[in-house]
Amino acid sequence: MRKILVPTDFSENAFNALKYACQVFKYEKSEIFIMHAYADEVYQQDRLTKRSQLEQLKEETSQRSERRLKKVLDEVESHYPNPHHNYRIVSAFGSLIDEVNDLVNQENMDIVVMATRGETNNRSITFGSNTLQVLKYISCPVLAIPEGFEYHAPKEVLFPTNYLVPYKRRELKLLCDMSGSFRSTIHMLYIDPVQKLSLRQEDNQQFLNDCLPKAKLVFETTQEKDKTIAITKYIVHKDIDMLVLVNSRHSFLEDMLCQSTIDKIGLHIKIPFLVMQNLYR
Image (cartoon, rainbow, N blue to C red; front, top):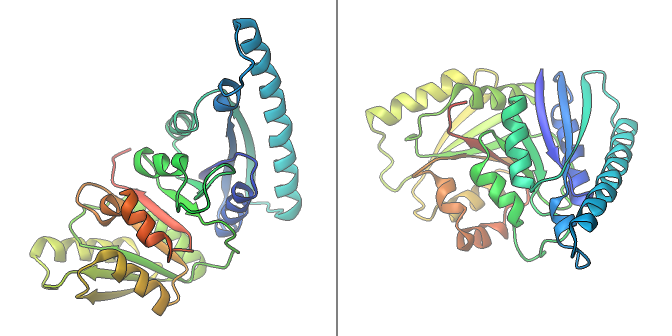
């Protein structure tokens, strides 16, 4: 049973991410958790001066959250009926990052699927602050869906790598199952002006090959020194449907999650972005 967490702020972007989750995992038996964290809605109210007002507002916000979650559930079940999918709604008084982290640990989630930006985020930025925090710190894979992205099967997947990261089998199995469902091609892009692999890199490359038997693997190299330029060029030239990166020290993602790099690459990345966490769970 695949366990999928989809946070929502009830925006169109969030519902679009939920739709993507339903479609990309449509062949897998899945339990999909639709969660709304509402602490910020309560504490941002100017009229809060007394504890009694806080408790009243918490109750009102909780009830409103439950109603809106049920509405989202009705809508997704109506548009995407699937006997393989079960849904649970979760309304939580807490910050988004804390509630996502707690639920990921409690339910041993396989993946978090969310929009790159929420309802209140500036359109000029690639990732909203909440999404950025989740990408960096949550201990399971995160799939970020860009604003306005219309679903199509991830047939062509780009996986840039330096072959230095000791990948985790559980994370790779998720990618393997997803790619197997759509007979995807995974483009392993080695970005290095030298190109010669060390023995360690060769072993990690073989490990990837062994862990992704359901996909067609294409091993590519580029001498482009700028990683973001190499990635964005490849996405355009190969008509890539999904970008996969691993979050660890000295990885491409560590560099890319610097705001300056995000601003740079965000102009080009308009496809789903899967971040795999290099952590034991």
